[in-house]
Length: 290
Ligand code: NDP
Image (cartoon, rainbow, N blue to C red; front, side):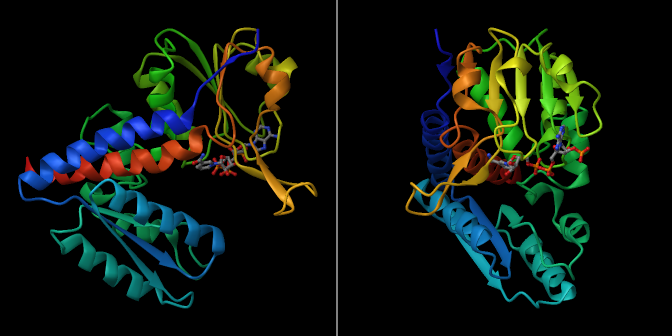
């Protein structure tokens, strides 16, 4: 029997409805949760992401604002803008869309955002808070979304062997910390891992986040495993009007035949990321009231 689908679109819709209810409750108390996204330059993919974040906020009854700056904005000007947003009581979440132009030091920018408004969860204070299990910390949205998908799909994380493919700051490493917090036994793999298939075959839960189209094949997956595909990769496709289509890091059809549950691409982790960003922003607004 092919694996059951973990439908990220449906789960994200539930999260967004919950966020809208929480936002309405805060508005009734006189606080409209607000997210400000800052975009430097005109990278088309980043522009699309920022627009969808702005739109999602407004749909949830929140304040969503995007500040668009030219690509040659000096780092000092961007830092001054962050200082202004840090001091603005109507802004609860600040997000600087990455990647930034090369002349700007992304780490310096992330460090400047007040940890209490860092709804992307990239500030070292939030990284630390999440590691030590302090509830006030903001976890990065993509791995936080994966945890919600596992919970909604009824996957038992406690005691499971979880293998995370990829160790980036945005996905792989925070994924490890969230899985450990839920008492999984976690292995993290990367480009230097020896005999990768023998490691991935140990996984009851396999999370693929490496950015390589259809890298995970059926022989790398234990029968009955739960597979979450974080990857978003473009592959050429002449049959598609755009000339390409999106695929994950997992060979979907072949792996679906082996796994017990699997998330598709598109329609899996992608929609969860924005939903979790809204959730973090509402939490930031509520924590400001506490
Ligand atoms: P990075 O490129 O930052 O990290 C990739 C990781 O994969 C690295 O740790 C790298 O190892 C590892 N890796 C690369 N090649 C191999 C290999 N052959 N074998 C084993 N490990 C390998 O990517 P991100 O974490 O930012 O993103 C991963 C994927 O997730 C991308 O497709 C991205 O588009 C997608 N993504 C999706 C999101 C969503 O909302 N759904 C959000 C963010 C990302 P090493 O460290 O040794 O170099």
